[in-house]
Amino acid sequence: MILIVGGAGYIGSHINKELNKEGFETVVFDNLYSGKKELVKWGEFFEGDLGKIESIREVFKKYKIEAVLHFAAYKAVGESVTDPQKYYKNNVANTLNLFEVMKENGVNKFIFSSSAATFGEPKYIPIDEKHPQNPINPYGETKLIVEHIIRDYDKAYGMKYVALRYFNACGADLEADVGEWPGSSSNLIPLVLDAAIGRREDIKVFGTDYETPDGTCVRDYIHVTDLATAHVLALKYLLDGKESQCFNLGNGKGFSVKEVIDMAKKITGIDFKVTEVERRAGDPPELVADSKLAREILKWEPRYADLETIVSSAWKWHQKVCQIIK
Ligand code: WQD
Image (cartoon, rainbow, N blue to C red; front, top):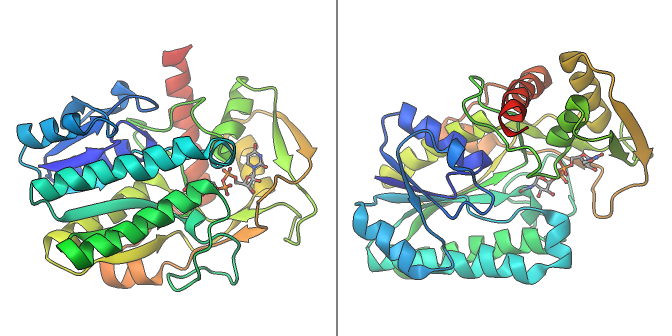
């Protein structure tokens, strides 16, 4: 049985689908703080909270867990700056509870949802695994601290891990079975689609004077189903007894904020309002991943790298879920 902590969330629910497709048995452990029961469509569900160690012990008692994938973290960068305690408590301290129970049960295979935010300001582009890690916000710090914890747990207790550092996770399951819940994210694509569907008045473009081809920031948007495939490969890698490793996950290709907005207008056919505003603090002009290592070692190949597939899959899901929640 594979334990998916935070499997009722955006990324975890896609991984749950992919693992079940590949024949793995899964149990989702989630406190439904931001996760949704509606997104748990495969495997078993156990409502529990990483802050309550007894609930973790219970899930390990109920199921024979072979490996753990961990997605249960807060991810709003801005909020991590104004309320760091919330982030250090959940993303770090509660994760230690999980490790404690894994250790008690002799479970030593772990896949960690890490982030490009561990790198901070890019020193060079594309960003490979050797790039210095100097996070510029508490969110990125929490992800880097957990990377350090698992490195030390491997040395001391033999806990084998794969840390996957996502760039800009986006899009939705192509069959629209799962996706990102509207209103739960401050990321560009869900906000753009909210503007298109009329749940927001406009989309604000944070800065148009960057040194990029069209003046807006460039990001490496990686489809969530491609991320899911990477997790399945990482799990197989660990189950094969391979060494711990960190991988950067992106397409190696950047799109600007304007390109994303133009694509959303084309796909939705809606001419929503776009307002140009000041730069947002802490936004680097360009973030692009070098994912050669994942391609070489995991044999990972992103399949949905084109912006059209990314935005149209997100739009298909967004329309469906907005029908349910309205
Ligand atoms: C993308 C671009 C904004 C909203 C964040 C985290 C990162 C990782 C991915 C988890 C930027 C611009 C956005 C809006 C805009 N998370 N934008 N108007 O900041 O690149 O990355 O999510 O690990 O750690 O920092 O993502 O989607 O917020 O922004 O113009 O209303 O869109 O300035 O250039 P970001 P994002």
